Length: 337
Image (cartoon, rainbow, N blue to C red; front, side, top):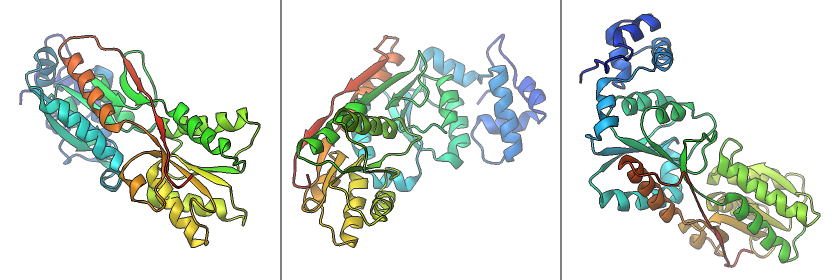
């Protein structure tokens, strides 16, 4: 790969000089090699950002879209990715649309320790654009990626910029509807196993929960972060029960966390659906696998994936899609609430 930049842009030698490293070290960073010390990696990335350096292949990719490849970036660890059915639905929707196009899809599971390597690969001109599914406030490498290739986000980005494109569901309304459903059935002592406070989906569903309670003149029974995982959802439910007091109902902001809540309730001899109403969010395969089956908020995850892919293909084709698509949620009634 030629690393000679486009005319008038910063050179690789200038990047090396600014970073205080050799030309070959810059080359390794740009190509995503891990054979670079953390201090050198940080210095090179800082120099690249300051000089706005773009390797030639990336520049050609942006101009002509010759790679015919896109990246699906999942900023999560492998346990979270393979353990949450939400991601499977998203990937299925994206794959359907990309499979009908001239593009191929590369998937990168980029947890924190892999973010530098992923960024080097993506900024090196290997793809024409990227879809980012899931986003934490700590994922700053995503912002740098968006300065290099067109990006579509799954879910509202943690820091929305005027040029950002994203597809999301109405998480605030979904959280509000879930809580109102419980209120309408006479529950007044309502707790929530919330999503992470560093993810917009977690923040928004918690806001909807608080909004519905406030409108009814109620206070939360308890609020505990369940991390969008089954294990952390169980831990959150145990913390809610630790006082010895038991809520009337629980809104778990994901089906996986609801399954964890089932486990913690049964450890105390409390039966979900009979003794405590439980509401989830997702309507994933988890919801129908539980006994009693989980009353939940359905988000159209597969359709979200399809719309993300279409939005990115429109950007790559030079069309001007809407910057935002917000999909509705709906209540699915089963036996748990």
